[in-house]
Amino acid sequence: MGWNITDAKVLEDNIFKLKFDLVKKIGVIRGMIVVDMGCGQGGFTASVARIVGKDGKVLAVDVSDEYLLEFKENLSKWHVKDMVTFIQADAANLKSVIPDDFADMVVSYRFLEELERPEDMAKIVKEMARIIKKSGKVCLIELSTETKNKAEENYVRLHEESGDSFFASHEILKAMSEANLTKVRVENFETNIWFSPELAKRDLRCAQVWFTPEEEKRLGPSVDKYGMKYPALLIFSGVK
Image 1 (cartoon, rainbow, N blue to C red):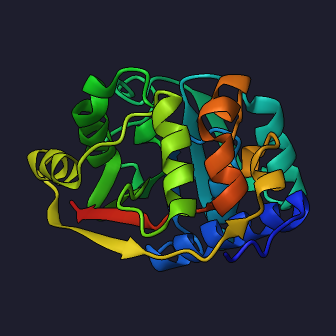
Image 2 (cartoon, rainbow, N blue to C red):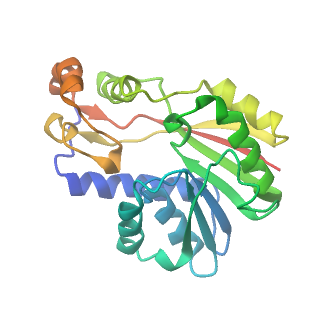
Image 3 (cartoon, rainbow, N blue to C red):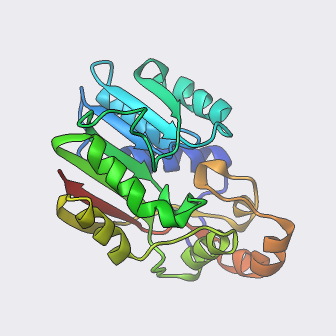
C-alpha cells in the first residue's frame, strides 16, 4: 500500500522537501525578486526564500492573515524571515501594492484551488503577468485531479468535498495566454508521499489535510483501507 509515513514530523519534512524541489524545478535562483501569491502558512515561501538567499527578496501575498502566526513560525524555522515581506492584499487587484515590472518571477503553490471567488482566476493571472519584468516567468503549481490509485483519490475527494475549486488545465493555460504570456505550458511533477490512515485523519496543515466528523463518515472507510497519497502536481508556466 505504500503507507511509509506514520509520523507527522516526517511528513512535514517530506512536504517541505517536495516544495524545495519544486522551487528549484521552476527555475528560482539566488538573488531573484520573487512574489509568492496566496502564501498561506508559508511553507512554499520559505522554500523560495532559502534559494533566493540574502541577495534576493520575496514578497508573500495573501488576502487573509489567518495563518500569519504559522507563516512567521515557518520562516523562523527555516531561517529566512529576513528575506521575506508579508503583504495582506487581494491578488486580483495589486495595482496600489506592487508596481509593474517588479519581480523576476511570480509563483503560487496550490493557490487557485483555495480561491473564494473562482471567477477571479483570470484577473489574478493578469496581475501576475503585470508585475513580472520583461522575460520574467509566471509559475502556478496546482494539484492534479487525475488520480492513479485509491490513496490519491482519497486526498482529492477530501478537498473536493471541502469545497476546493479545481480548474481544468485548459482554463489555466487560456488565462495565461490571454494575459499575453508566451511559451505557455503545463508539465507533470510526480510525488512519492504516502501516509498512513491514522496520520491522514490528524490535523495535517503541512499537507493541507483537515478531517471533519462528516468527512470521517464519508471517507473514513476508504482511508482506513488505502491510506492517502499526495497526488501529482501540475506546473503551469509562461514568460512575459
